[in-house]
Amino acid sequence: MARLFSSSRPAMRVDKVYKSADAAIDDIPNGSTILCGGFGLSGVPDTLINALRDRPEKNGFTAVSNNAGVDGGGLGQLLQTKQVSKMIASYVGENKTFEGMYLRGELDLELTPQGTLAERCRAGGAGIPAFYTPTAFATLST
Image (tube, rainbow, N blue to C red; front, top):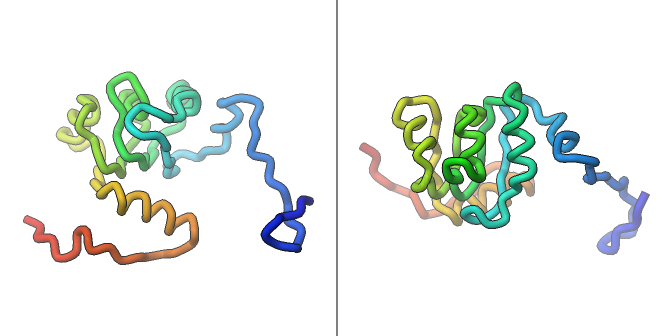
């Protein structure tokens, strides 16, 4: 039990510290949606990505990030091992593996403007099921 400064009621403390990256990814089931932080290749959780890459039996992921990494770096490693089946990103321009997979129909893509992507993550974390943004409103599709 721990006291929260914003509230007088006690709350259960959740231990989010793991002994290793392998232990941290153990309970991620196949088909999960994984959010990957960072910007470009700065601040990307490489240790966790490497741990997932080394466990090819874990697959079918939907990866949410502002980019798709590069060949051999960031989320590009999970694309090379074909562990990602869908990408939700605002930029995918520097990854040849991603490009090939997408053009061959091996990967689903949902391009989302950067601000909308951030708001989707925030709203989902806050339990807000829907929100409006004028970014793509009334966009013609062909």
